[in-house]
Image (cartoon, rainbow, N blue to C red):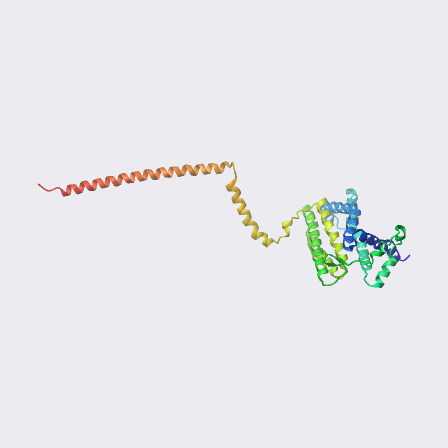
Length: 335
């Protein structure tokens, strides 16, 4: 049996009919049908996704022991045997990290064919699409699936059949790049938070943080926009699942701000807050003692100044009296 026949019979044709049914239920909007299909597939594959996330976290925790085995055994065969023994003792399946990718990759390829087939606008394309539909209209006594053809290609301001350098493709390219970059950033932060990565692995993670978003963003331009919408929705849902069940690691939204901007704004704000807190902390004994000492010093200074003024006034009055006496003596006539 040819592989193409198996692919069309067991994957592509069922997906075409399922997407048409979702379009009927989504008020004839193929864009909402894509979003609903993405949500359904993520819910169905959620247990496998959780298993993949747990396997990834367990592999990260075993990195120090794996590094010790690499240093201890120089023979590659012995090293692989000891590594597999470590996996078996820890109950970790190294292939468990690829579970969700094994399902998502065929779905991604199949959705490419499904979107091209279901969004056909030519009469030949619509006739071919009708030939791929199941004969379910006779079961319900209505042609609700065939009546939806041809499907609408508009979803808000997006043209789901568009590809190349246009507004739709560029918008989806930006969304896909930003969502995949954040997903890779959270994954790298989660891995670096464990502190179990070597320098080479850290460099590889930093490189993949930029390579994968750029690669998929460029791929979105070359395919129909409906496929870009599907991948963007899948990535966003993956970010939510990763954040909810595994945590963001050391990732914070403030880390998205460039370091130069942070260095310009953070010190000034920190200084203001420190000064304000120091000035307004209630019940601080050191501040009370300091204020008491300052008050005491001010009182002593005032007293000293008053006493000095009094002494200076007395000295001035005494000198004035002595001067007046001497002048009187001079004025007296001689007898």
